[in-house]
Image (tube, rainbow, N blue to C red):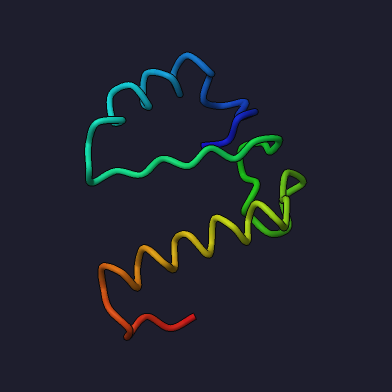
Length: 72
């Protein structure tokens, strides 16, 4: 979740978090100081450091659940 998301309000984010926080199958990451679309290259909201962290987390998840056949 983007802390400064102009499309998903803080109250909507809180509702999502509240509804999923006890689900062991869900991990929610909050990216502070970035806007919606922060990981989309070429977008004015793109923030390299946050995008790379989100990518690394996604790849780790895929490797954990799909195995070592996941290529970067």
